[in-house]
Image (cartoon, rainbow, N blue to C red; front, top):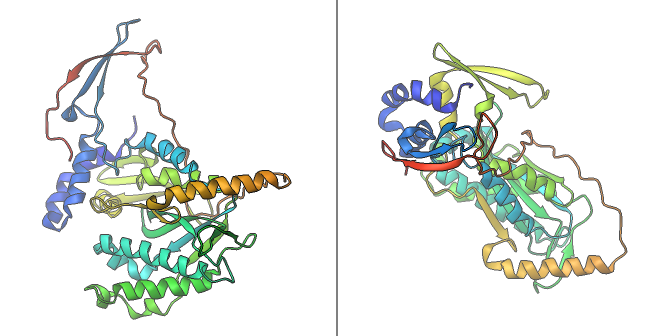
Amino acid sequence: MGVELADIFRSHGAQYREKFGDRMPPRHRQAMRAIEQCRTEVLGGHVYHCQECNEIQYSYHSCRDRHCPKCQNDNAQQWLEKQETLLLPTPYFLLTFTLPAGLRKVARSNQALIYNVIFRASAAATQLLAGDPRFVGGQIGMIGVLHTWGRNLSFHPHVHYLVPAGGLDTDSQTWLAARKNFLLPVKALSKIFRAKFRDALRETTCFDAIPTAVWKQAWVVHCQPVGNGLPALKYLAPYIFRVAISNNRILKLNNGEVTFRYKASDTGQSEVCTLSAEKFIQRFLQHVLPKGFVKVRYYGFFSSGLRQRLSSLRQHLISVQSTSSPTPNDAQPELETSQPQPEIPLPNHKIRCPVCGQAMKRGHLIRPTGRCPP
């Protein structure tokens, strides 16, 4: 078995916590403890018995922390299946809003505030521009997902939005289709996003800590067509429930240093990075979200309170398509993203015997021996 994130925390976590003490957010301590205890006797579990060959296996409970690389696997598939029921039979676009480098230091120290502002400012900017009759001319729907890391665990906050190519007129009855392969002008959208972000932070205590050059530079906003939306959903789903690094990317822990692999964004080639254990833990923990933070948000006619209207709109568009002449399915474009598309694991709740492969029978309960994660 290779090195896991939990091994690094168990070996160097105590030293890290002792060094940074009260400067560590409580949520970071909770996440570390949960990952260290995940699937160990501390959390308890069950004994499984193979009735064919009498093999005995111990299965310990998971911590269920959303930052643990061992947990949350099945949730991605379940989320994807639920979102597919919301998809409209229309082309889709993937919008990406990236936080400038000059803002990232402030964002790291004020995560709850900055992440909420990223969502609010980007969603408001998009809806404002979409309301212009030159583009859509009505209310649009948006499914937004926060993503905070780069491939080498760097701090790189950005929000992805899956957006249908059209919107609802002011009467909430008429569908206004957007132009083919064009949703909104990204340069104009970037300026509106920057202005709304600045206005939202102007009255906060962290505004003076932001370099003035940030408000003068161009902010990065990207928009690309993604076919019927399903490819983008499959891309987004794993990132909602995965963490900044998976255990299979960690190559070794040796002499207080952690080596892991990642794919370079410029070349697409596999690279290797070696960091001190302290630096590695620090990079990982900067992606631990504030307690209770919602990283998936719905806007416009995707909002939870408008699902009945969304269902009616979906049926209307399906009926319109069924009466029009059939056209060949367009090839789905590849996503131009800064992250590789991971596979979504399928649920598998049966424990198989490692000796004969037969399904094992669950036996008695193993009681927890320590404090369980919250």
